[in-house]
Amino acid sequence: MIEEMTRKDTINKDTVHKMLKNNKAYLKGLEAERRELIQQLSDCQKQLADLELFADIQNEISISPHIDQAAVSNGHTGDPVGKLVCIRNTKYQSVERAIRHIYAELERNQMRAEAAFWIKYIYNLTQEILPLHYSIMHQLWFTYTGTYRQIALEERISNAKIRKILENEVTAVYVIVTAVIDHYEKDQITPELAREILAKEKDFYEELTNVEKGKQGKGE
Image (cartoon, rainbow, N blue to C red; front, side):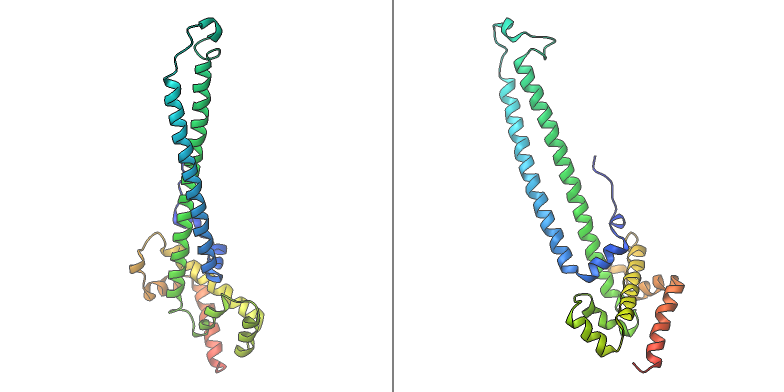
């Protein structure tokens, strides 16, 4: 039985951070996983077809007229044909279970991919409502080496401050994603709606506002 899942089940704060930090690599990994699962599914379906053919062959086999050689017991235990059919049934059921498992994994993979696209979409929309200094985040998500230090120096922000800003960014997107994922279609989500959702997180929203006010007060 395929385990029921929702898109929201696939989303947590770590997932959001991973999406924002390296969205392309994450999606590429999901696509590779999907292709591997499809190949496994194809192999299993071929195996299942072979077993079905095998079953047809066995059904055409009649029990030997030398019944004493077959040593039939309840139609199965001593019946060579019965044994073959039972073995075939066991293998058949095993492959069926494998196929159900692969379908379940494909479904989970699809949900993770949908979650990734939603988070990226809402992240881009979130940029319209977050404080102005968050514009540097687009560059920070994709690099941690020389560019990271260069931006920190140019913006005169410590690494600790940047990490705090990054954490705020993740939290902001996470708040919005979890609020809208099951309630709105993409074309229904507007900056105004996102701002309204974020404003409900009063403490967090005030923190963002205060950071922005402090930055503007220093003329940065």
